[in-house]
Structures are given as C-alpha cells and as structure tokens.
Image (tube, rainbow, N blue to C red; front, side, top):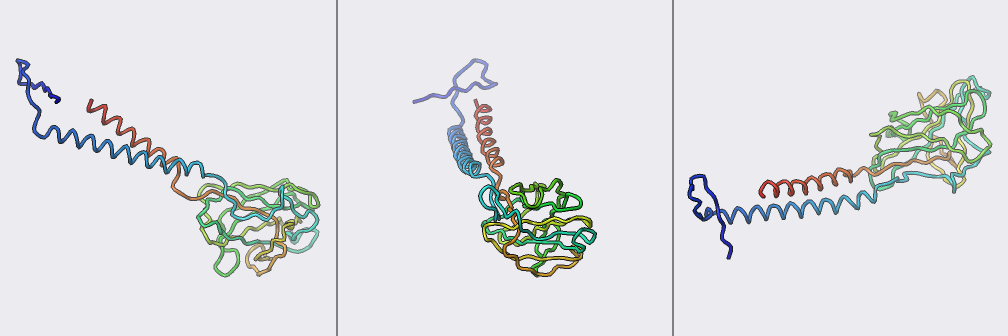
Length: 251
C-alpha cells in the first residue's frame, strides 16, 4: 500500500499529512484524460499517414497515346482573319470530371502546332454555360514557342494557379486561340477519342456546337480536394504535444 506525503505551508514541523479525500479521484481523472487524448491523437495520425501516401496526381482526362503521342499531320484549325486562312476559327473541347471527387487543377497539356504568323496561342479553361457550350472563364494562359505542326511529340504544358476546382461530375471546356495574324492547329489524338466541342468565328462571343471525331489531343491533371494530410498530421502531433506538456506540468 502506498502512502502519500504532502507538505503544507502551515506545517512548520514537517509532520506527515494525508491527501485530500478527492485527491485520488482527481489523479485518476487526469490519467484517464491523458490516455484518451493519446488515443485520439494516434487515431488522427493513423488517418493522416494513409492520406499522405495517397496524395498525388490524378488524371481527370487524357487522350494522348503512349509517350504523349498524337497525330502530327492532322489537326483542327485555329486562325485569325489576318492569317493565311483569311478567317477566324476558335476551337473548344469539352471534358467531364468523372473521378468521383472534386479535383484541384494543377496542369493541362495540349498538342498544338504552329503553322504561320506569331508563334503563340492563348489556352483557356471555361466552365460549362449549362447549355453545352463554354461559359465563365476560369483561367487562361499565354503559350509561346509552339512546336511546328507536322512534328511529334512535344506538348505544350501550363500549370494552374491554386484554387481552381473541378467539381465532381462537372463539365468544362478547353479552348486554344491564335491571334488575328496567326495560324495554328490543334493536333488530333491517336486513341480514337471523340467528344463534344464548340467552334467560334467571332473570338468566343458566340459558340456553335460541333462534335469532334477525333477531338484534339490534351490531358487535364490535378489533385484530390480532401482534408490536407499535413493538417491532420499537425493536429495529431499537437495533441500528443499537449499530453507531454500536461504531464510535465503535473510532474
């Protein structure tokens, strides 16, 4: 049997005194709270570590062949009225997020070849307008130094700003646009992928539905929108830290 000794301020003789009646109860409750906190922290960490290992790039859409292969000799025209074609042509291809989760966009790759004029194009991402055509602009990029049309298999890559979310089940649009003096072509894919598209002859003011078979070669990449593994790890570590601080304070 253990005997607890307490020194009180009023005990100048150093006599032994017995603990308060509720002392054992408080000690047991404190120990129980530390145990529960440890169990909770370890549970949070056990959830966070698998999430951290699962975190990685998710392919939302991809119609490239192996090694980003595409058809170098065929493509959909993008041109301006002052180009060699003599007319405006803006192409847009649709894709749907079928991953089963919301995705934070990280990267888009497209096969777009330069023919004449200024070697650049504007790649844009649009939400769907609800009627099967490009709607609100979500993000756009100026792409320069395009590979020459007729060569394979260099792709043009753009990276997204944080916060661009592709909702699960949502349809979105990728468009490639040349300037008024240039002519480029969106290379066809070689995987027999086809899909919904739209074409504009007035720089995107209006769109006309156009089924593409095959459609232009591109992919869309991102990461899952989930509770961040690092946040969970920090929470679990913080809870374990509280246990340590509490024990130290009671020592």
